[in-house]
Length: 452
Image 1 (cartoon, rainbow, N blue to C red):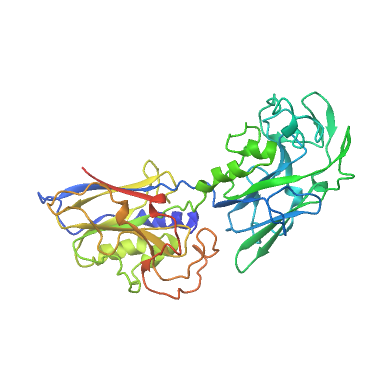
Image 2: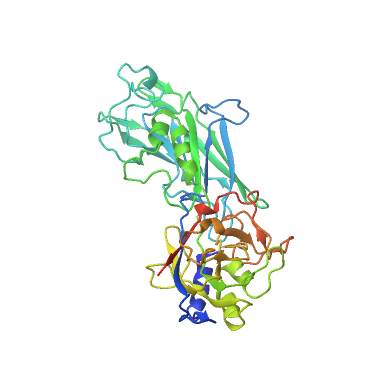
C-alpha cells in the first residue's frame, strides 16, 4: 500500500458525509468519541549482527581473505546500513552513509554487485586518534594499556576519515584507501526478495597499512546491519555518538550493545488508511468471518486503502441493523485527509443507544489485503446495565485478511497496493494468525472510547 494510494482514496472520501438511520433526540442515546491511534514504535524494518566468518565456528574479526555474510528480505523503499570497526584504530569504523544505501533503484532494479565504493571509513569521535596499530590505546594495544582507554576526542562528532588525516597529536597520517581494506558485495534472489551481503577483508598484512613501526595488520570487527527507510539508524554525520552502542563497536569491535539496542525498534511501521465505521444492533455489517468478501468495497479498502466504495454501499443500502455509518479520513490536527502514520490518530463521534455496537475497518497499509477491525459482532457500546462503555477497547480489535489477494511479506512484497497480485488460495475473510504475522496488535493500534 502506498501513501499515494491513500491520498487518492482520501480525496474521494472528502465527498462523503455521515449517514444516519436513527434519531439523535432519543433520551437514551449517548454520543461517543472514538479515537484510533497508530502507536507503532518501530524505527527500522529489521536488523542483525554479523560476527562469525564464513566457514568459521566462533565469533571473531576478519583477517585477510576472510568473509562475513548475512541475508535479509527488503522492499522497494528500504536501505541498508552497517558498521564494523577498523581494528587497528582507536574508534574508526567502516560503514555506509548515515541514511544507508538504497536497495532498489528508481526503476525497481535491486542492488547487486560490488558496492565497496559506497563504503566510508568513519571516526566515531569518542576517543583521541592515535597512529593506527601503534598508539597505546588503539584496538590491538588498548587491552594492555597501563592507563586504560584513551582520552576523549576533542572533536566529539562522527565524521569521515580522510586519506590524509590529522591525528590528535597533530601528526599527519596517510591512510590506505578503503578499497584496499574491505570489499562489500550484494546478491539478490528475485523469487524471494532476499539480499545476501558479503563483507571481505581484502588487505595484505605485508603491504596495506604502513606505520612508523612498519606494516601493521588490518582487521575488520564483527558489526551490525540495519534495513530501514533511511532514517539514519546508527549515527548522524557531524553529531556526537548517541550512546547506543556505536562507541563500544568503534573502540573495541563489540557489537553486542548496539545490536541489543536495535532489536526492539524492528518492525513494520505501517500507516493506517482512511476507514469506515458503522453503528449497528445486528451482526455482520461489514463481513462474515469464514465467508467470501461481499464485493461491496471491503476489498478496495483492504488492498488499496480506498474506503469510498464501502462507505457508499453502507450509506445507500444500510445492512440490517445499521443505524449510522460514515468515514474517518483526516488525522487529528491535520489540515486535509490522508493516511495515518505512527504517532498520529483518527477521531470521530457517533450517537448510539443501548444495544448498539461499533464496527470499523482500516487498512494495514503495508500488506496485500489486511485490515484492522472488530469481529463481525462489533464492539458493544453499552454494558449489561446499559451504561456506556468507555476506555481502551484495543483488545476487541483484530487483524483480518480479506482473502482477495495472495499474501506477501509485510512491507517487502512488491504487490502491496498496485499492481494487482495473484488471487488468494483461501478466499474467506479470516483472522491473520500469529504464525503468519506475530507482532501483537497493541504495537500497531490503540482504540479508545469516551462519552461526550
